[in-house]
Figure (tube, rainbow, N blue to C red):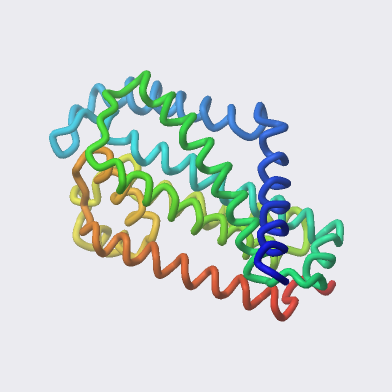
Length: 257
């Protein structure tokens, strides 16, 4: 394929993925905003008012970066896993695989679709957060980079889940038993510094912890984790999962049933 043909192919996938979730924005975008608002009201305001501060920051402000990132994670992942599995279930993913379109381009198209949904939801939840916290971005570039890389990472995770899933029930297993525990134990609602040595060490094995702390540093200027280490881990995961996804498509893993 020429570069122009590749661009047209990529744009077609991205536009399809964007229109897929934006047509039903009431189901794909608004629920995340409502859920974030409930977290701020119940945990941030009602419970947070009794907890006081965390690292010298009002509790409701402290949890804001994690709540925004959690919405990005869930929606990036959910968009790709549902879209790719539907394409596989309806058998039209096979048309892409036998076309001249490179496998890396197919992966990139679905990932950009997840990134777009994650970005839209992230912006909406950010606006919601502004009604509850004093919005002050400590380092705008870090916020954008963390949000983008995290969205890409979990979009890739959603694609891998879809590749191995055999039924619609299978696409809910990873979010329920892996994604949700990692997210809630990733330091959204607390600092790992308050944990005992054993649990703090165990928490350091959770990759989501590094993403949430990097986002918190970008928004508030505080972090339990060295930012350079956090970015290194995120980038390594992105590169590894992207390469693995391309490999799976190249050999048709999970496509022949």
